[in-house]
Image 1: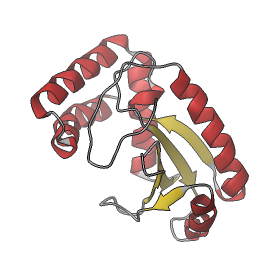
Image 2: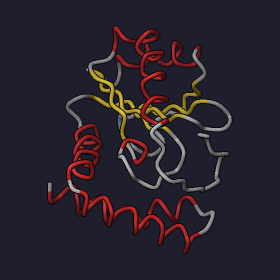
Image 3: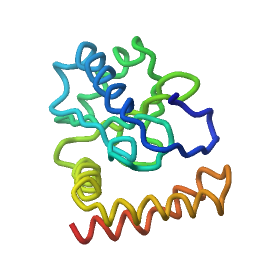
Length: 168
């Protein structure tokens, strides 16, 4: 099962179903806004085989221009996404699907550091089993320490993510 209620934190063991759910959703997104996107990628922990994860499919979409990408808001809303604005990240369009929050879209300009970081971090963990195990262990530790505090959990992971991005 995928999805989390707002503010809830739950981690689940990796499921191969997550990649299938991404592919299905990417197809729906391409039908809705394909003419406006340059690339679409499965990112986040559900994109890393074997990784413990929040059961939410993170989707990164690359666009040419933040301003021009506003044209994507209405079509994505028609397929079940709620537009949440930037959510604290400059020049990002952020969307959440369903009340249960099953999918998140992070839409960035293809030249942005954020777009590059999503791909670099995911690829570093896919390519280095030692790093992936270290990250999974940290996630489990932070989750056990913070319980249902999603914000604290996210903040605790930030230093690991920053370190990996500097190294790769």
